[in-house]
Length: 571
Image (tube, rainbow, N blue to C red; front, side, top):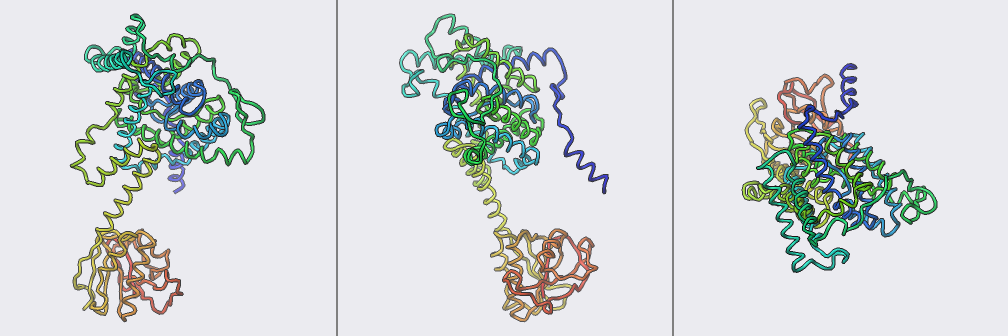
C-alpha cells in the first residue's frame, strides 16, 4: 500500500518533458523549418498585438511586450510544443473597462493576480476538467473563433487614423483586396512548388517586396502605430506615485485587491479555457497529447512575469498556433524564435517591419480562418443528434456575440442538461413474479435513478394492486444522488402505509456505500457487497422527511447477495 501511494505521488510530481526538440530529433531540415515557422508567426504577431493593445486602451508596446514575454515563457515550459501564446482579443475586451476606470498600472496588477490564479489551477491539476468539454462545444469554439478572427481583420480595410470610422474606397480598396487575394493564392500554391519556405512566409515576403518595389500606396504596419521601443524592464505596478505610462500605481491594499480580483478571475478563466482548448486542437492536428496542468502552470508563470514587465498578459492564440503548425512548427524552437524575432522587431528592426503591407498579413489570417473553420461540421449537421447540432451553432454564435469563456460554459451546461434529460427518459421497469419469494412481485429497474428520473421512477409502481411483498431489482440501474434516495424512501413509505413490504436487491459497491452513508440501508455486520451473493436490504423511512426513523420497522438482511447493479430495499 505504501509503495503504491509513493508511486502515485511520484507520478503526480514527476517533471514534465521540457526538452527543446521533444521527440522530433535534431536535423538541419527540422531546425530550418522551425526557425522559418517562428519568423512567420512573429510577423503575424505584430499587427495582432498592436490591434489588441488598442482594444484594451493601452500603448502598443504594452501589447507587444506581452506577446514577447508570454510567447517566450509558454514556448519554454508550456504543455504543448507548437502552440503560440500572446496578447489576445478575448482578454483585451475584458481589460478595457479596468484600464478606462483605473489606469494601466491596475491592469498590470490584475495580470499578476491572474497569473497566480492560473498557477494555482495548474498545481491543483484543474486543467484535466477540460475533458468535460463535449466535441460539439469544441466544434462551436473552433467555428466561432474562426469567425472572430475573420471579423477582426475588417479593421484593416479602414482608413488608418480614422479610428475605424471610414472604410477604404476606390483604388485603395481595390489594391487592398487584390493584394489580399494575391497573398492567399501564394500561400495556396507554395506547398505545391516547394516545402523549403513556409507558405505564409512566402506570401508575406513576395507581397511585401512587390509593394515596396512598386511604391504602392496601401496601409502598412507603421500606419497602425510605431512599434519601436527598447527592451522590457522590470516594473512593479504596486506602490505610490506615477507609473511608466503616466497613470497612478496600484496601492498594495485590500481595496486594490477587491478592485482587481473580479477582473483577474475572469481573465484567468478565459485564458485557461482558450489555452486548453487550443492545446487540444493542436494535439488533434499533430497527433500528440499535451499536458493540460503544465500548460496552466506555463500560462500562470508567463502572466506573473508579464505583469511585472509592463505587459497586458495573454494566453494561447489559435490563429498564430495554426500558422505555426501549418508551417511545420512542432517543437519549442519555433515558439522561442518567434518571441525573440518579435523582440528584435521592437528593438532594432521596427523601420523594416513597419513597411510590411497589412494586406499580406490579412491574407495570411484569412487562410488561417479557412483552415481553422470546421467545414465538416456543416456536413454533419443533419447526421448528428439535433441537440448536438444546436450546441455547435449556439457556441459559435455566443463566441462571436460575447466571448469564448461564456460560450464554452453555456455549451457545457446545455450539453449536460441534454444528457441529463436523455438519461431521465431511460428509466423503466420490467415486472415479473419472483422465483425465490413465493407470491412476490419483482420490478427490474433499468436506467439511472437520479434527480431527473425520480418522477418517472415513482410512476412505475402500482402500490394499490401490488402483492404483500415487492422486490425492486437494481441490477441494471444506479442510484446516483440525494434525489434518488428521497424517491426510494417515498415509494417505500407508500408501501409501508399500505401494510406491504418493499425490498431492494442487487446492490453494487458504490450504491451500497451511498445508501449506507445516508442511513437508509439496514444490513447485518457480516454482509459485504463485494460478495457475489444476492441479499435483500431494507430501508428506513422518514429520513428525508426529517422524521426520526423507527428501528423496529426495518428489516434485516434475508439472503446472501448476487449481482452487480445498484441497490436497496425496504420493509
